[in-house]
Length: 304
Ligand code: GLN
Image (cartoon, rainbow, N blue to C red; front, side, top):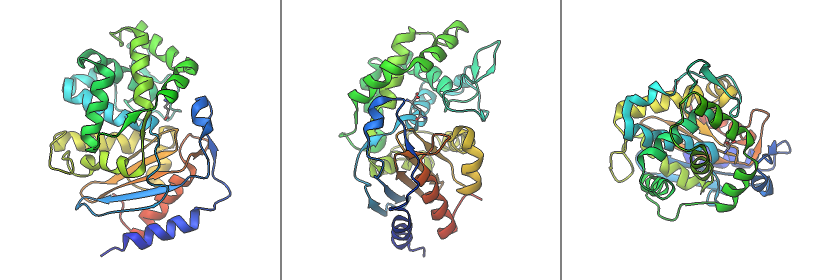
């Protein structure tokens, strides 16, 4: 029997006063206001045991972590048709790189880089009746938590400065891989990224991917075969040009966001969320990566 609480306490104590904590993202001005000293971890096992340390009850901007949730809903809507518009290859490029696998067809390399996520946003805008409200309702259902909200200030801040995303969306539109109005798709994308959660809510939201597509109260969100595929995409594409490093150091499917959150999971076993706003050069939480490396090393449980 692994003593998870003791292991999490040890990790927390050894990292909480770290001097090198990375740099808080400031290209979205609102994110730059966050206190870089924050640090929290929350673990949720598939059997429902949970344990948190540090600032695990404090909300932060989940940013790109939302791309997994958007992908899930888009797959609910269009199934495998989605893969005609987005590929599943790691990009080896930064998240905001205009990474299109085949320039002639305008197909982004995967759904977890910004270009791919914009195509996924376009699918959601096409299929939801009220895209922003309906997406939030879906996320609340996944998390089984009606208190989860968008952070309007973060969404507005990104809208004012999101030139690169606007460029990607326009490029995709020129390839006819965005069907809706570009501004509407961008607006939806910025709101999606602005969702606020704490580590505990994040672990609960991702519980279904650790549990073959079933949420904590048994509701089926996706088929086990789709959970398998989404986990594969998280493993190969969840950390941009650091996906290899994350698999090497941590060995779990996971997803990061520039708000400093990382969620990772072991199918059939557990889901773990970490938040520390300082990022490394690749845009992933510096302490978050270290904490997860220590976790899979100390517990001896990774997918490898
Ligand atoms: N909203 C951010 C952007 O589009 C998300 C980036 C991230 O979390 N990696 O730039």
